[in-house]
Amino acid sequence: MTHLETDTTRERITEAAGEMFAERGFDATTVRDICQRAGANIAAVNYYFRDKQRLYIEAVCLAHRAHLEKFPLPKWAEDTPPQTRLADFILTFLRRIRGGREGGWYAKLVMREMANPTTACAELVQSSIRPQFEILLQIVRELLPAHAPPEELRLTTFSVVGQCLFYHFADPVTRNLLSPSDYAALSIERLAEHITKFCLAAIEQQTPTMPARRKPHTGAAK
Amino acid sequence: MTHLETDTTRERITEAAGEMFAERGFDATTVRDICQRAGANIAAVNYYFRDKQRLYIEAVCLAHRAHLEKFPLPKWAEDTPPQTRLADFILTFLRRIRGGREGGWYAKLVMREMANPTTACAELVQSSIRPQFEILLQIVRELLPAHAPPEELRLTTFSVVGQCLFYHFADPVTRNLLSPSDYAALSIERLAEHITKFCLAAIEQQTPTMPARRKPHTGAAK
DNA sequence: AATTGATTGAAACAATTGTTTGAAACCATT
DNA sequence: AATGGTTTCAAACAATTGTTTCAATCAATT
Image 1 (tube, rainbow over the protein chains, first blue to last red):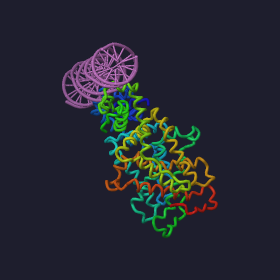
Image 2: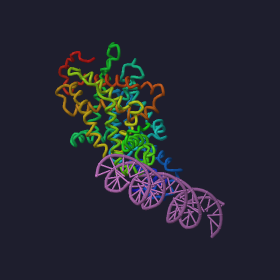
Image 3: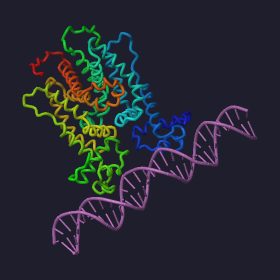
Image 4: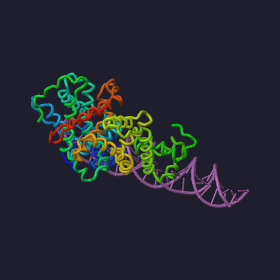
């Protein structure tokens, strides 16, 4: 919030831009507002970045990197069962999404990028979303029967993140849909617990096509 | 697209505004563009609506009503099992979300409203989202054990719609994440089949708190 | 101390924005 | 044909936008 004198002008602008773009959107945010908040001159935007558009892309990417580092996945031991890793992933994912206060503006920025994809979207996917997706994909792979087709793998993975992302994208709806007390009851921990249980139940009962023999899970779950 | 002469100027403006707001967003859409597309004079916006903001709200609400009518839920017989109703609901929901071509712009508009909620959001929830939510809630209620707490009911319902909405909100991501052929394989019917199976599996295995006796499902599914 | 290059500053620029204005055109009723 | 209210139109307004300009300032090297 208060800019340290050690920060360079360029950094201060990027930071201020990220917050304001997230809060008001690209068009509604003026370079004058950004520069005022960053304590810089108007011309600084065109000096350090070529124009407003490039500043936006830079701000988005910086924000995502910083955000991922703020809510890291736990370091798993080699023998950590996939059920536990799934639970951890879901909890961390929800924390990132609904990350309290200072993390919130990043989530908003990503949502805007989804509603109005720019060139920043493709870059975001390649640099940071894809690695996260691969991690979850591996977890689901270990949970599903070995012969499960890759398409089912993908769909199941999407089912997991879809349930998490709902509380991000549809937040304005749930806020208007539920009573204040019901809405307040949607704590991150409660949501993570439900989603984890829901997904594990669905996956473990999954007996695709041929009922065959049930893969005996070696008492791994919790 | 081509405006019929029977349409009144006010209607033409509302329609054009809806499409353009969805495509480019509120700020990026100028009243000049809207009026040009509607074949009306610039002053018409301020004449029929007071200002641009009120035109936006009107356009959003009109769009949603027209959209729901375009993709209606089937009329269920009294004895239609909840499993079938769930499958129907999910399929219809996906159709609404990814509704081909002319329906697409409505989905975009709603997404923008989520990313940047205005007064139109609350009105949207009350007038059309809530009734749909109640329908699904009732279906899930019949699927879950009778003693399931209302919170679990809500969370399960959110899990259903979350999986559907994923393919709406995260579309730019999946497009960049998957290969073109894998992305193309995400047909509405395939998605509906997976989500339905996934949810039914999770719900039917759900043995909340006390494992108790398994409720024998009377061969209702399919 | 002088010089060079990078950075900052205030002001102006050119374009676009939503909105307003007031007169013309239209249309039904008298 | 005249009237009154509604609708359309071209033009202009006032404000704001991203961007540019060019001189002043700073920091380090010669």
